[in-house]
Amino acid sequence: MTTIIIGAGAAGLACAIRLKQNNPEYKVTIMERLPQAGKKILATGNGRCNLSNVNATGSNEVIAFFNSIGLITKTDEEGRIYPYSNQANTVVDLLQSECTKRGVEIITQCKVIDIDKNLCVSTDKGKFNADNIVIACGGMAQEKLGSDGSGYKLLKKLGHSITPLYPALVQLTSSSKYPRILKGKRAKCNMKILLDNKPVKEEFGEVLFTDYGLSGIVTMNLSEVVSQNFNEQYPKKCHAVLDLIPEMTVSEITDYLRKFKNLNGILGSSLADIIEKQSDGDIEKSALFAKNWKLIITGTKGYDFAQITGGGADTQEFDGYESKMINGLYACGEILNKQFECGGYNLNHAWYSAIQTADAIYNKVK
Image (cartoon, rainbow, N blue to C red; front, side):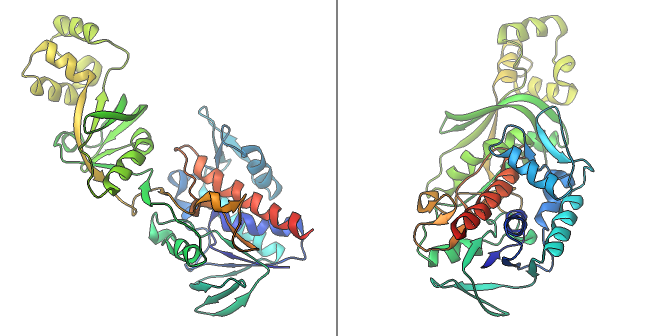
């Protein structure tokens, strides 16, 4: 039984290993466009590789899989799971060595040109026939790390639908001058996205001010609605509204200002000075601004900076991870229209969907 996997990223490597764990006699080949496998994994979790999250679907199976190849993990107070070494290269090295040990062939610098309905793969290194093909080549986020969107074209040519695509878990750009003034500073606040002054999504957490706009986990998690808006032919006016002091009411902030004259003791002098200047020193206005600080949002930093791609292959056209249209064709990982918040959920989906795909192939053949 021969399986060809397109893409040597998180999903592709995990799927190959699981196939070999299920049956060492399977012939498994991974085709990778870049000169090395697992490049995007090295960038995850700020180089620490946030593998999974205790609250993610299938996290127990994912950790059991990694334990089976010798990786020990640890969990932080927010449920995020990392390799014990806190180094992403530990994960990549283990995955690659496990592939080598189990006889998985990885063909690097191999560009897939076409896949036909008889499961023949045409590449710039020749043609290859398979009993099963797994498309695991990611989305369009951070092309330099391997995801160039070619998988969508392959699936579309084979008859599959691709939902609208957009950069997700990405920083937001702003034309307001204040984020540039506050560059490098952080605020623990509640952030709300308004489209044509109507609230569409909000979340509490840390926001990072930058020279282009806003970053931080809260920003990333809210970026989906912003990306989708600016993907429209006629996007709505977009604002981010920050409640800079969510623990206090307007009345309590007003009382504080009457006593201490400024918000330095709460927000720090840089942010407090901006609020004071915007309100012309008016105490009531300052309190309102602190609870409803509005910034103009002009878009996102785009695919080059996005952690993942929003949208993808329509999951309704798959039975689990196998195509309903072509027998023996599978897709897993980011290429599917399944996206999650920050915190290890998306990488967990890559591993888990790959394991499930390998098990589906094994059970079908068996």
